[in-house]
Image 1 (tube, rainbow, N blue to C red):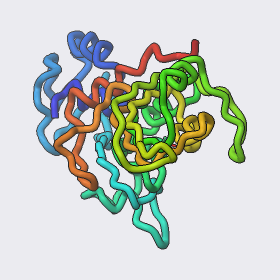
Image 2: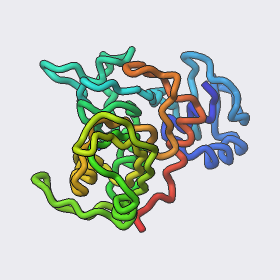
Image 3: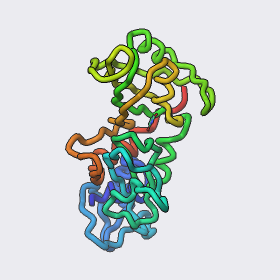
Image 4: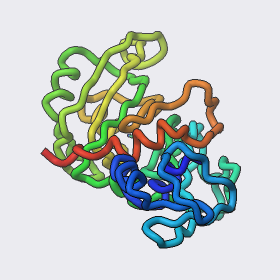
Length: 251
Ligand code: URA
């Protein structure tokens, strides 16, 4: 792994802070000062930062294409969980960031980076999450406008007004509903309330029959991943996530 990534994953600062400190000679690898952030850290190397040894408990980020039928939990006595789909499924420090319903597919981030998970989920952060959905019932420009204004939800799970959401109608397909059609839509929400997308459509009288998360913040589901497959994030993806969330504060 590159030295600058190693340092940022071990909590030494942002990439730009680290770059500055590296120039001043803050890091040493196996006793030699290294100023170049792109230098590779050999396996098992002793790395120090301002003279302090770094434990090297690297942060791990997985992108999972969650399939329908598994639950988003770290463990369950009866049901298959998303953790069962990871190669490192026995690791105790990994957890899913946020929750997708059992029947929802798509992008799920699994990590041991607690502060990042907190930043992605904190109510004031408003990280965009984009979903593709198939909806039974009529979806028209009227619903697009209601989503844009912020839809009122008041159901058995509570009441709230959703933040303005973007709804795009992709097309209709034969198959269901009184008018015999399903509407394929793309929707971007900025919160992560319980069953939020389903409840937003339910408030317009429509029913979500299929839901897939495509993106969360800067992270996009890799189309090469089949449902049930996962991979580690690339350096670029991890950097975009860890550094791209600054400035999403509540407005
Ligand atoms: N909204 C939902 O209704 N379900 C999910 O799984 C995610 C968002």
